[in-house]
Image 1 (cartoon, one colour):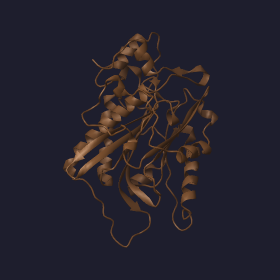
Image 2 (cartoon, rainbow, N blue to C red):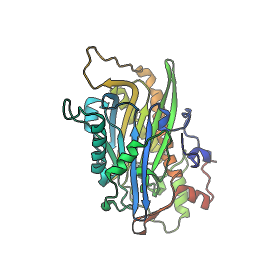
Image 3 (cartoon, rainbow, N blue to C red):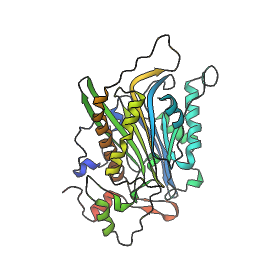
Image 4 (cartoon, helix red, strand yellow):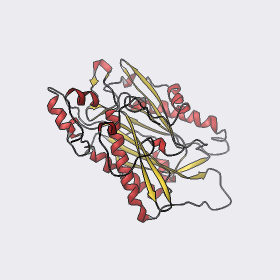
Length: 357
């Protein structure tokens, strides 16, 4: 479910791509995936935490096929090395601000230890996954507002309801020189052997206004001409893209799929600048890999390579729409030292700009 009070990009008449969305057009359309968020928004404190649970069982004991892809490596993400080496995900994923990744990791480790007393005793340790973007313009990032309790609250209170925009880790983020944040979308993939879902959740904090493109229209350039004396920030942000699917794929196939998030990202106007970090983490819920050694070989179903183009299309469309949802649902924020960023929806209304012809 989505927050029904929020007006999303489709409510403006914009339909991205050709594939159908899931019921809620959200990453939680992938069965078992839930999202939790803690928002801290007061004066100089504009930050938060977003948690993604890939399934509702014990993720350490029942790992998922996973992969990561770095489009541009200006980032401080944690846990991606082991995912790429072993091809599995064994913890929830936390998103927060750049200087809070240590705090978030501590909370995530405690969360996993409580649920798995064998960690560090009769088995190995755990690979916590934490990703970040820099919210220092609106948030006093040096103040260390995020605590372990905030991260734990996000982990402990997840649901299928995903609020977008100025929430969770997206509270202080910027996108295309406007207010950015959390966005989500999904696509349905119909194949001969079944119907599957591709879900995307993004944390957007990148881009300059003049590059913003909505379904092929140069909305950013139009807005820039309307906003007199505006000062465009340099693109030194980032985007974290979380891709969840129930499509049966190998780790190699999943890696090929998540690389195609760049097609959707580019269609919104991004040129992937040197100071912006673009990191993608993908997982498939189709197969659970047991932590403990089995007496038999593990069977891994996967699609035929000739079917993969549909997944390429789905992930590109969902990424593009998730970015636009993060923008159009965001709200105007005045943060650290009076710094502020306007909301796209307010500017569209103020200047009577239509997103469709």
